[in-house]
Image: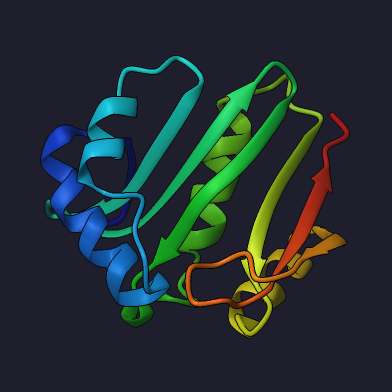
Length: 144
C-alpha cells in the first residue's frame, strides 16, 4: 500500500534516480539535503515497502506553492499516486490560494495531468530547460 511521507535523507538517492530517469535532470543530492530542514520547503514521497515510486517538491511561501519537481515512476503512473501527492501537498498548506509550476512543452502526460487538476497555462518560458526545451507555466487557483 502506498504511503505519503515527508522526504528523509535516506530517500534522497531514490528520488535523484527517479528525477534523472523520468525528468532527465535532478535537483541533486546536495540541494535536497540542504533544503530538508527549510521551513519553506515541502518534499513528499509516495512509498511502498521503502521503495520511492513518486515524489513532489515544492517551495511554500504564505499562500502560494511553487512546485519545483514532481515525478511518478512510469510503472505506477495512472494509479492515483500523482493525485495523492498533489492533494496531500495542498492539504498540508490550508492557506494556499495558488500553485504554480513549469512543465516541459513536450510533456503531454504532465500537461494532461495538470489540466485534469484544474491548472491553466499562464505563460511560456523559452529555452527554460538545460537542453533548450521551452516550459509552460501553469497555475491552479485554490478556493477553500
